[in-house]
Every structure is written in structure tokens, then in C-alpha cells.
Length: 386
Image (tube, rainbow, N blue to C red; front, side):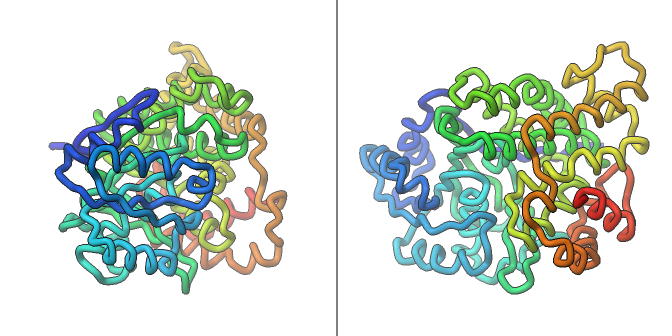
């Protein structure tokens, strides 16, 4: 049996890599990129810095900086108009997971038209698209290396997972120095998001030897550096390590899959507008507790990779220690419950059945070691709320 591996064509990784963005665009043979980003990066001067780099390289960039957290179908329309007006021949996704996800969707829609819903799972789109260059500014989503984008339906609040080779960036520029200004809350949420990607890729029913190596490496790095980056955002070693681990975890799940955490996380984000990394963090310990007995050896491997237990620890001891460590980690980086976040109990409870239905419809739970029923998903939602 063969394994199909899909990765960006090339990447520039390391301190100062963003200064080579113009060379990357030139190497791709395009000249009119659309820089898709957000207002914060524009107001903080980062967008103008990239524009100058591109112009110095002879490019003619334009900027769309009205992306929103967890991009919606409505938010894509003015961006698509801007791409067409500029006659853009490439899209640069500059920011966290949201601008990169928006850039991926726009690259496909600009060439093929239609609506985002027509590209959502279980379909997979590998047709033509504008080339995407991803420049991440957070260490978590791994979107710079994945063949997925997630867009929220503005009408139904459904978070739609859109998979396929067309959504995979052709190039990534990964510069950890862009992450040093991340506040602790964002550092924590994106860091636990990356850890979730690595764990779910490893325990997924679709795991393989290639994704396993990346996932284990990412887990080890995140376990050693996330708390450091959370406490001291200016720690260059921790920031660089987290940036690399985020990309490794993204490559891992893009070539395996995510599982129940992500399946349950997307409805929380869609209905309550909680950032994706945070909703993953709210779920990770409880979903692991639910799943652990179905893949004791795989979860034990995670604990060993994270150096929670010695290599000689029995599987049951190691897997139990993993669950305890995930509880402790989320406590150490102050992950709130949905109740503490401010979600009304009645509002939460009235949406449980719909959220469970949407979680199952995403397909991700079928990759989980233990496949849940709708009632079991509702039970997990209830447990994390308390």
C-alpha cells in the first residue's frame, strides 16, 4: 500500500526569511500578487514592510486587509472583487490561520468561481488555482503547509472544511521573528492548536510512517517550548522551535488527518465565534480521555515523545500520564472553559444537537481511534462546559 504525500513546492525558513519574499515570488514567475492580511498587521506596519520587499523585487502588489477571524463566505466577496480588479496572478496569505485560509479559498474561487460550499468535504478539489504563498505570523495553524482551508457559512454558521491539492500553498516563508509580538493568550491557543494537530495526526486511523515522524517530532518540540514561549514571548529559541513544530504538525495532519477534537471544535467556533486554537484547547484533554483506551499504544507513544514518562513506561501508565499532562498544560496556559469564556448556558445547551450533527458531518470524527455517537459528542460538549 502506498501513501500519497502532498507538500508545498518549497519554503524559506528561519530568522529574516521574510526579507526573501520578493525572491520567492519572482521564482514562481508571477508579478501581480494580492497580499491578503488583516488590519492589525497593516496598522502595525508589517504589511507595508512586505509591500516594500515585493516592490524592490520588481513586483506590483496590491493589498486586501479586511480579513476577519475565522473567515466567512461574506468576508470573501470583497476580497475576490479586489483580486479580479487587480488582475492578480498570485495570492500571498500573510497572518495567522485566518488570512492564510482566506487566501487559499480566494485562490480557488478566483479561477473557478462557484461558492465555497461546493468545495467542502467530503469533496476534494485538485483543479486549477492561483498560486498561494503563505507567510505565517503565528505558530499554530500550520496552514502554510496544509491542503485544507476552513470557511464559515455566513448564513448557517457552519464551519466548512474544504480539502484538496488546490488549497495547498506552493511556497511558504516561515520567519519566527514575526511571532515575537504575539501576546500570551494567542501564544497559548495557537501552541495547543499545533499540539492537537500533532497528536491527532499520530492517533488518526489515516496515520502513516511519514506523518508519524513529523507528528512525534512536533510533539517533542512543543512539549519542551510552549510554556517557555507563553511566559516569555521574546525567547528566540522557544519562538523558533514553536514555529518549526507548527509547520511539522501541519505537514503531519495534512498527510494523515485530524480527528474528533477538530470535528467538535469547528461547530464551537462557528456558533460562538471562539478562535479555532482556543476551541481546540478547550476540547483536547476531554477528547483524549474519551479516546485513549481505543489506541493505548499510540497515545503512549505521544507521552514518550513529549518526555512525560520514560521510554520504558508501560503503555497504560504512559497514556494515563498524557491525559494528566494535557489537563495540566491547559491549566498552566489558562485555557478557559466555555462557561468561563462567557458563553450562556442556555445558548450552549440549545445548540448541542446541531453542533453534534455538524461535528459528525465534517467527517473528522470517523478518523478518531474511537468513533463517537452523536450522544457521546453531546456528552463531551456538556463536560467541557462545566
